[in-house]
Image (cartoon, rainbow, N blue to C red):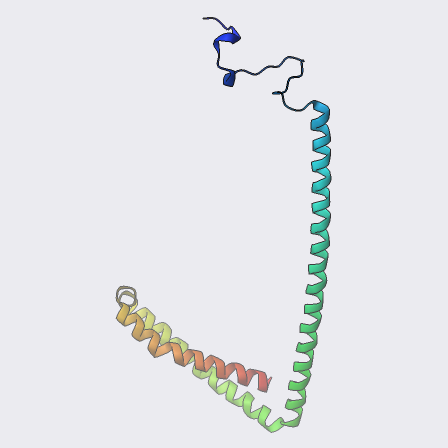
Length: 154
């Protein structure tokens, strides 16, 4: 078997001689210059990214400050309201305590129902839908009322 380069297609041959021809890739000095240019572009891109990240950080700080100010203002207004309505605040606290115990019983009933009908809930869409219809809205409404009472009764 001969290893004569003439027997191979030009597609499968690579000329590694030192002579420069028009088909050869760029010279090493050109590759070095290209790498330097690419490195500069990368650095410029990273600097631009850093500038954008700094801008995003500044915007986030401003949003956080505005949010903190709004929360402080809301808390001050709620405190003023509580001070202006001490009797209502006491009533809200009492209602919260009562409804918290109601919620505990409700959750216990819900948990018992799930335990009793575990197989039926997983096997029947109808049973599961009935369960959600029975407990879902009441739980959502009760949680909403408790949340309001908690804020007002603070």
